[in-house]
Length: 252
Image (tube, rainbow, N blue to C red):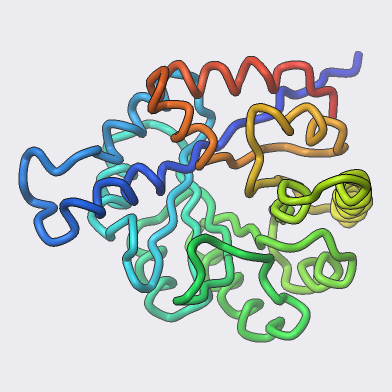
């Protein structure tokens, strides 16, 4: 008998911290410093999130180190720690001990992550970081564009997973939508065939989700901005529950 596994939802709560930092960047110890990412994580858990994602950036623009450690210690969900390929972030990850670490590119000038990790040209340092994290019992994902060259490099890095960057698809218009979707499908097939777990994320929202669900071999979607935005109207628990309901038809 063939059993189809449900598509998992990782909820990225970074932008809860973005809103908090807009007012309380220098006073996080105040009891009314809100919104609180920890509370958002609990609400996401109540809504059916399968994991939580957070990204401590080098410039600490949203999530702070303390946020990561509180979420890790107080919320009984797997934690996906997004991180730059830097010694500082490796040290934090080794202390935090998340279930998963997703290596992502960082630029001080970007508002949000703008593309996939350049695994092809950064293979040697990436491979070293992958090994260090795996030695600590952390499964490692690489955030990559749907480009077969980078997927091949991800295999060579010995990472456990890839997360396909869906941003180009999300921003596409007209005929480019189908073109970008085709790239994602091809990349997912290649990653799966190479033995990698295939996840996806960036720019996925309640409207374009149905197209993402045509991509085969996905294990988890990591979604943040859309869910946090929806939560302003209906609350985090309801927003997560809605997204989970929309994901239910996925057949893999």
